[in-house]
Image (cartoon, rainbow, N blue to C red):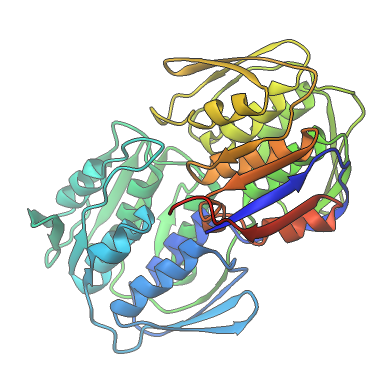
Length: 424
């Protein structure tokens, strides 16, 4: 086990680069199962979740090799596997994204049913209903989803609730189905668009990406392609918050501001100065403390649930009271209890948190419960007086590439150390 030890109070200054998006690279890697051949995927971050997906692909017959630091070659030539076992799927829920790719490319998928997670239940019933509408035979046995897709055909798939993974699975299955598929109430997230653009580069016929209605006309076959993954908007948003919390002045390279509109609007409301020049985001904070602001998490283009924990840290030292309303996951405020250990005044009532800003946070020992909670607590440590120790940081390694090194580049006093006192 490891922990991060942070000496707070340093104002962050300098330039930081954003890695490829975790939530984009995983479906992109899954899509290599649609057509045998050689792919090169660029801007791939070194993350625990990426390694897990590479291992899943390996069990399905793919061979992955690093061309350079962030470029991955995936060779699916001759690969015919169709079973993703529990031991790997339990490590990362996004492994279920191979369902659609296997159904489309190999006409059979046997994938361990994913369980719940710390932030709440995320059932895949909408994914399975959509696959059934496309003509798949969907069964369950011994904890596995068994999909047979010999007769894939286009259909109208209406999602009762917007689902990113569901949209991605149906996209991958539909591109090789006979006829036209229409996805209604499709997820509009940039990561879905990125997957769709890769599929288009492979020869798929898709219209409406980034809108609530996507049209797919099935094709006979696809061609492997090269694809560069989009920047991680959540990592970029996290660094924006870090700059504001520490009253810093930072430049963020390789970010796409158009993916961060809702986040930037709220951070400006808090008093941050954020601008773009020559593709670089510049962020600073001249106020001694942020102004209070409210957020309500919503599917894209609304405020992302993956930024909720980070901005709660900013609210905790704001002048006034802020309200967080979480509409996506039912259990995504576990970080509130750990923030209170640092002196934050946070009261959670159902799906809402009322955050009354305090003048300053005080360093303490805290424990991460999930990926974004980890980021929240690291941010809190940066602005707290004294020393903060964040345990169970294996969560952070799932979604942030070398976060302590990047923060260190900006002047943060942060160090990764062994943690002998916490059991895994």
